[in-house]
Image (cartoon, rainbow, N blue to C red; front, side):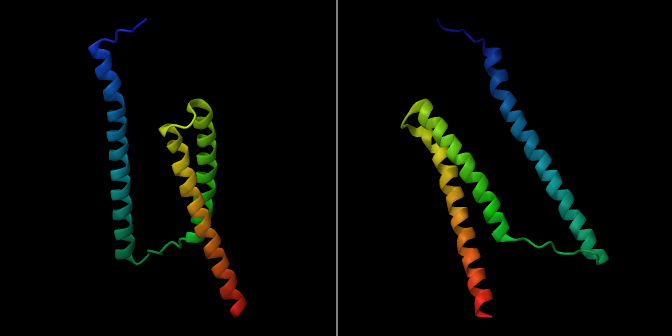
Length: 118
């Protein structure tokens, strides 16, 4: 039993994701532009304070999230399709998350070594 989809429906189906991506890109662009102008005004008035960024904390959070999502997707794709290219949809975030956790572990051990030497 084949379904006949009209050309108008095919066009709508293909335009909706493109529109979503374009609108999301516009929102992100203007939010970055607004943030840039805000920082420039703060620098001009002398009220700008640089935010601290902890690469160690970022590595831990991103690694935990990516590892969990990647493991769940890998199991799902393995059960659904077996060994196929779809499995890469789970293995890629799993390996990226594992890499982030390795970076976190390396940073944590180097911080412990630095504090024990002092």
